[in-house]
Image 1: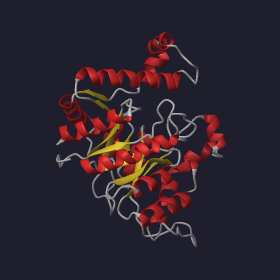
Image 2: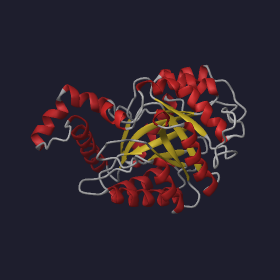
Image 3: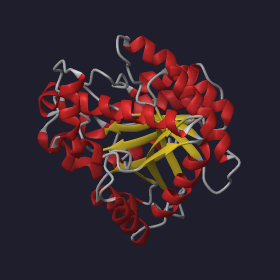
Length: 328
């Protein structure tokens, strides 16, 4: 993107549409990354979600390996790995492996949520208290990536001296304070948790402690985008995406008629789900660019992480092109 002040990046949920299999989503992830690389997007991140029929990015490291092997230069990373689900050493070895194979291209965003529901948390063998160790786990992980392991006699091979860049992900003040304290970049999940955005970024910037690697604070803010050639087409796509989101989150696997879905969308539960999508740029390329410029200012962002909300492969690839052209 030729706007030197503000890079654009992408979140890829490896969405499984309709009757597809995860393999279809992975093929699309490769198509996405190849086009994004050509258009000049900065990076693509994949999120660790579990037990969700429509999201196939449960194993980010494996997916990153596949996409990285089919691209040449674009940065790829986890946005994020839910660290309390894993031992820091195992994550250091996974991302150390990626960094050795694809030097300079691998990012690691870290979250402390489980990325799923309570039943699945048990299936992950995750203790409820695991999240409390998140700050220590982040520091242990950082030690493995440098040459200063915090655990005497234990080194990550691969991992050591790869210096994989770490980002703290968050949707509350906790992550903002931790990122500021550790002198790490901070990525806010405003694409689905808009409430604390301005406050969290303010807390992060005001309390930032410069680190050797990051003398300045760095904020990535996530935002939903539906862009099409006409305003009508964009509105139609966005409406479909919203209905699909309510069906997935509030329908709980039930088969719903369109009328039942209408009622669910209008219900308090449906409205709450749509409220999570507060930051959403919809319309023509010009309209979307204006929205994103205003949003970047509101979020005091150094980089925008775009969640492209489309309803088919073709639409999403077209949206990626339109957005890149508009941003240029």
